[in-house]
Image (cartoon, rainbow, N blue to C red):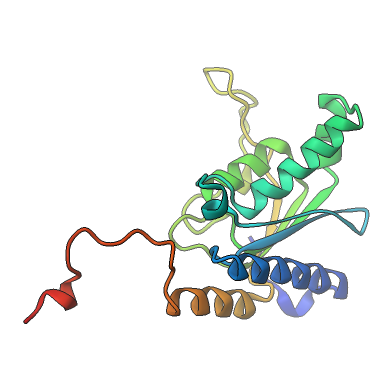
Length: 191
C-alpha cells in the first residue's frame, strides 16, 4: 500500500475529514474513535462509526456499519446481487484507521475499488500491517466454496496524525467500556 498524503487531492482530504467527523461521533458515544465514509461518483453514499459497545456486538466496526447501510438501501431499491457487486466495484472507502482483518476481508470479498485510511492498525490491520488482504487472491474460490477477495487499491497515512490523536485521547482518558482486569496490573501489584 502506498502512503502519499502530500499527493492527495482536495477531495480525498475532504472525504477523510468527514471520516474524522464520524470518528469524533464515535468518541462522543464512548466508542473507540474510528469512522468512515463510502463514496461513489464523488458523493458520500454511506457513513459509519464504531458501534461495538452501543450494540454489544464486536463486529459493528465503522466499515461494517457503512456496508450494511448500503446493502439495505440497495436491496430496498431492488438491486440484484450482480448490480450490488457492480456498485461496490465503483466505491471508495475513506476510514480513519487501517481496516482490521475482518473488515479488510469483507471489503475484498465485496470488491470495493479503493480504500484510503489514516493510521496503521499494528495489532489487527488487514491492509499490510498484519495481513495483506487488499492484495486479493488469484484463486476465485476456496475449497469449501467460500469466495476469496478480489483485492483493492489501498493508500495509508492520510491524515494519520489526526486519527492517532483521536485514538490517543480516547485511550488516555481511559476506555470506560474496557473490561476490568481480573488480577492486579504488574505496576499496581508492587508494594
